[in-house]
Image (cartoon, rainbow, N blue to C red; front, side, top):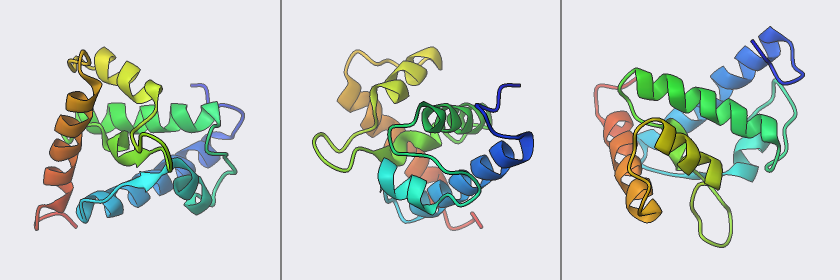
Length: 124
């Protein structure tokens, strides 16, 4: 397994941290900019435009989607400009069978799915 220059433990810790941060934001139907997410991950040092961050988010989304919870990285967005996920999100969405012909609709549909799952009262 490629850990993108990190040890297996560092990569696993970073993924766990990122997932916890994202789940916490999703519970309140929130979103988080890439820059805020990387600032909160303590186990490894990543930048907002770091390709390794995109791999990390991709792995999280694939695992979450496999578990039926949707693409959790849908809530990670640009801080300025379109305020949407980056192009890698939509590439992965297409690979996972989403219709990406209308990226705004794709994003909103996935955001609703993730928010609905995590904001449910039974989630801890």
